[in-house]
Image (tube, rainbow, N blue to C red; front, top):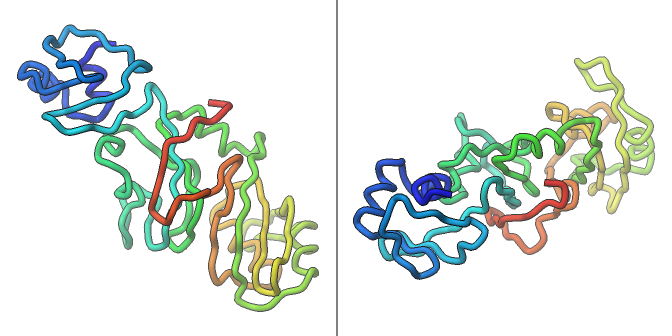
Length: 230
């Protein structure tokens, strides 16, 4: 891969800016200074990248996958209206790429958020036919019994949608704490399902999405992951 294309893919700068950096010998890969804009790079062999004497993040190429523990009061949008964009939690290098969240979380919802520049992987994770499980920890406004779980598993009619939707699993941990598993991704689905079953959501946390949970990530932290099916 040409060094200029590599640096652009890393989100370092524009083509012209990357050429300037190489021309002035301000780029080092694996400790070696790059002296020509004709140099070739094997992305999988890059262990360190330095720009103007500063270590730079190495983004996996051509596709990368990010697990982020979304905090509350962030919008999953590149053009937020009321809160900061969740993408501002990522380095500028990554934000320079064509990244999208896999599904959405409301501003007040926390937990697992996957982000990628791989459109095909995004589609596989969100397509209803692939039935990728998402587990939510729901704090209920009103105490509930197992009757609520039965209603959710049997299916509830979503208001204004004229469609019955069922949870794959619903388990009460406490009278006001519910774990619910779904595989669809309808607009405000969890909140609408709970409302249709006769309760309200006081707090919502996505505990798991497919194979991933937040693990040891604090709110707002992220890391690269490598899915088996990518």
